[in-house]
Length: 257
Image 1 (cartoon, rainbow, N blue to C red):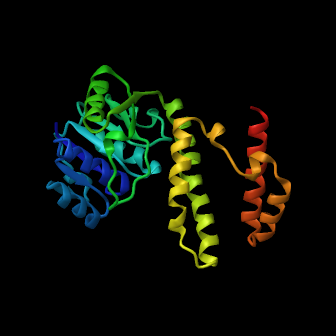
Image 2: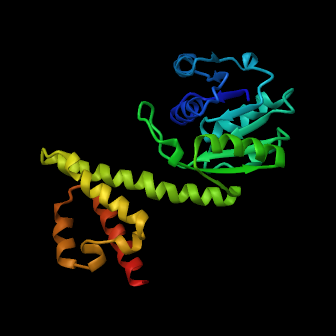
């Protein structure tokens, strides 16, 4: 199977290396930034280009891992003359409709994970959500997904958008809370890594029971005196507002149990 990787960022890098480890080495990397395309291609041992006209014409699959607002333009520019090829985007919040208007074989392969270049992940553990417009494309995307992940789930675009929204809460917003905690430790010249065991235990409980059942602390107890004292320690008005809103949300959720 000849796969062209479109993109060279965090996701493109991680999924390309996962494919290589699975024995499916991409044949080319296309990126508008030539230096980045070469960097990834060197890791894969394949061709690279920054020119649309130099993208391989007879590839079986074009795996698109670029910014959401660039996906449609990429497919529109590459699909003509490649009627038999499968075009897969990897975005959580982009409907399959965005690309199926340009190709007969549109599909989605969305790995639900936060990726960073240089930080290895076990792709086999990552849930991969797939979608396809026809059986041929479904067979292709299923084969690719199964080669890199042990958790492949077929869902539609609307479901995937909701999963991506949930992922923002579970990962991005949670990570920002880590950053807010880090600011507090930095101000006191303390080591944020001390929070490692607490973070790991909280995440473990959330996945083994339920975030609702795992919630602890002054907010779920509605300990107004503790919360008042903590509010006094917060200098940033925005952080104070976040604290208040989270306290209200936690208390409301616990009261609904």
